[in-house]
Length: 378
Image 1 (cartoon, rainbow, N blue to C red):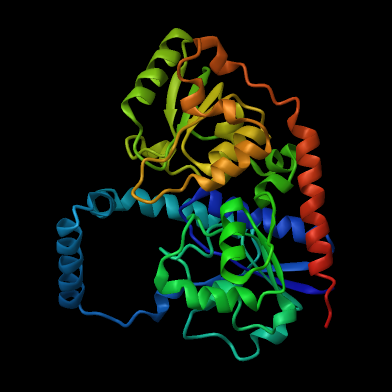
Image 2: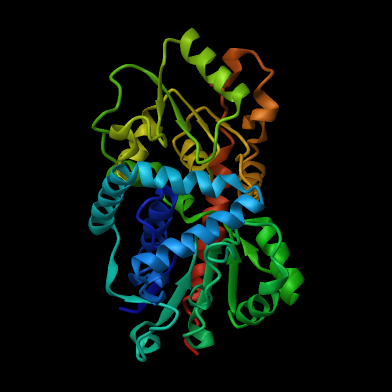
């Protein structure tokens, strides 16, 4: 059996990250390949620092952020310190999920340490999905598969996570992307970037999580240990919640006798540490979902749950991927800006009847791309 190595961001703290990795694995495995995720840990390349060196570096970073009045990362760092034990417990639950559902290598690769025989171990390498090409926190040559021969490189629904690239990375990105023969991205903005950089047309494919049917997802889900016994409204926000959204959530919950469950809030440790399998069940069992998350939106669509998607309050614009999915599935009406002035009952009246045919076409498009890319045996 031919072997495929997936190269993606391996993070044991983000639901979308773990679930897209699982979905990519299962989609390619379904085509008859042995699939393994190659663990990339770039942190191992960092030189060992003394406590004093670490303190000085963090202080300098803190000062620079203050000078720029960039308070969001400062707030995150402080929060991480105060809630370190909860974060560690969450990571533990994510690792257990990964061990059960994702086939990972027993070795790690880094920018500076890649086994000499790695290209020979696999017939193909697939980079994606997730934001593997985001210059802010990825952007490593590893995620462009520079270690592999050209005919083994495939980009599957890869994402930049941004609409524009900084000048500093254009030259490398142009070279690295030009060396990948099979290119597909997750957002139209990504296709536009590639066209501008290289003159090539990249196919836009749906996120791998949309490739698996609802029944497959529910087969690996499990009931949240602390899920309410009565009906609830679910929020899943990765950024702050705007005041007008908060007020609407409270109003809808009160008028419909719904408990409010905040899935990404430190305020409830029991729910914050839920693993990806529980995440699936929390969405599937909710009466309505409010979110600013791409994958919160994806699973609301897959499970046909009424949802409201809000723009992420963040210093970095991340709207393109949600713009793409709402447009593709003709669900722009579920945007906060388009629904906030409607009558309350309209929030629960989500029509998904037109989605299955669109989803069928998108799945075929992705499968056709993978079949061709994985059949190249030059």
